[in-house]
Image 1 (cartoon, rainbow, N blue to C red):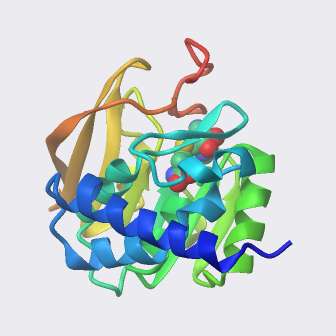
Image 2: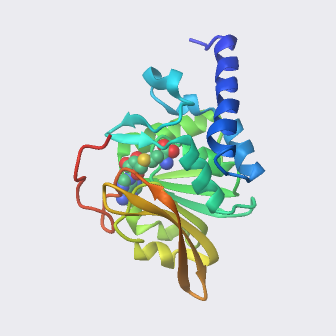
Length: 227
Ligand code: SAH
């Protein structure tokens, strides 16, 4: 059952190449973010049949019509949260748990919400097995946020939203950062917002394409089959 060491070496080499060519070269400058992505074994977060492609420059299917985000996207979104290590972070859209693992190395605590029960359970099992002990997964509609543990110093939404869900703003600390893809189901802009004096100031980072955020403050159904 064990993976031969040769394979682990190959994964480590692929991971170094991913961080250098796809993430650092394209402008993610935070050494803390680069180190976290050098450390997390992305191949553990993809289905077996995609393991050989785990470090490729693209999103991959993870079941339920959902995807693990492209590595560059994970790096850029994580950097935009400006984490220093002391933060409590809310993530909406656990998916495979890969982004949660990266965040867990950069913050004090990560609370992640996933609406698909099967994905939430698989991510919880995986993160526990790999030793990411400061991540807490909840199954539910993350478009409502997670008021029980609010406020959060940073909030990351890893699915495309029609607008910034209002309850997330109220669950963000003063000075906190929120990163979210906003637009149509076909394409979005990645926004970085900061809460100052109770209001949110946002700027556009770049265009992107995510699977839809469904739920109360998301869409009621996907427009198209997710790719
Ligand atoms: N961050 C993930 C990728 C997430 S893909 C990773 O690293 O693998 C987006 C995820 O958001 C999908 O798993 C989808 O099921 C989930 N999602 C969509 N709408 C949601 C909602 N309202 N609440 C919680 N999760 C949601």
